[in-house]
Length: 506
Ligand code: AMP
Ligand code: MG
Image (tube, rainbow, N blue to C red):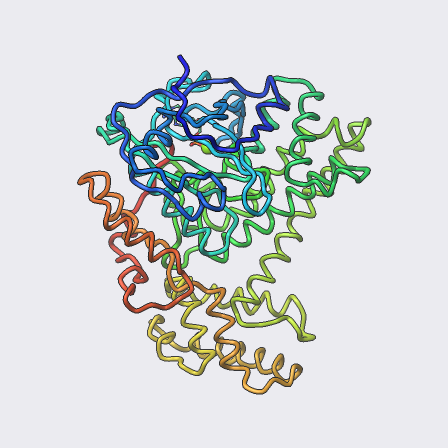
């Protein structure tokens, strides 16, 4: 049965449904008993030009529960495969999500609008197709935090409580998330048509992805190799941003790596508190495959899986195709390193305009991280207090460290490096300007794990949304040190972090 159509027209232009028949299953959302709007992202709705201004909450709840789809919606479940923890699963797909349509936003960018938790699809396998309030609001908090930090990400448009219980380890209130993405094309989408389809289908998918995300390649000769290189480049930039923010995705399976280069799928993700390169919070990641420090290596591994699917498009001779692909994958390491170093310099307040070169700055950054690790210093606050130190106020930084000798030596090196740069530039009062620059790239406020859990528990267990809303507001201005929000900037207690686990697919 089709869902009733609301008398709301959204100017959809559904290129995926139109251009790629055979790459998805048309499917209607399940209807839900009593939809209640928990979250609506007005700013994003305006950016998407949805024209929903006059709608009341009940109408929005109906719309974003899938009960009354807007005119022009064409709900489809997309097919994809994926390597999950290194094991190839040829048959995943949208088991609890539906792409309802695409719009062109105010900046001329094509964006997907999708429901998550909207019921079973032909790809559901044994799953119920549902989602729960807590994890969907978690996706709002982390996605909006990432966005405010300036990190490419999918975003939440709405969350609706369905009024229906979902059965997990315990019974939880059900919810549907509306997610906005540059697209939902994944490495796993290519793997699906590589495993099940024909090289021709992979070519059609690649052509679609190129036209949508990398149109500058359309006029080039080796466009598929260029495509692989361009996807790798965006991943190199993205993972460097994650690393500098202390973000741990938690489930970097190939179906969770997006072709447009956005962060996608906020399941067991978390932000690091005390610096530990081995940090991993996901309850199911027992081997630490997706630990913080593994992320660049895993991204490269995932890109190699994408490359495999593209081989027939790269060259007729397989050996030659493999050589071309290997060149791009090997180059990823250097591309990532370059993005990481640029980000590191910004965090250290350095411009890079000094002759001592990349190796010295990399070593300076690494010994800073060694110090943080040795003394288990809070990652976010350490960087932020380094900005204070740049302005001449060292006490807050020193207060984060138990012992001082290593810190003194390191600060001395850093000051010399800053001085060398300032002498070359001949600036008047570089200290204040440096501190200001550093405060624009070193956030004061990240989603602290205990605050996130507290807000979600209140929403999910008690239907109390105020803590969620207050936290969300705080996360929208991560670079402003607003003392009224100090409780959100405090690290989680050590005892909390020792027990802290995140969960997948709930
Ligand atoms: P994820 O862990 O969210 O990346 O999901 C991995 C795969 O499992 C995807 O194909 C999802 O659509 C599917 N999946 C996760 N949860 C459910 C569910 N409750 N019902 C049906 N499919 C699900
Ligand atoms: Mg996923």
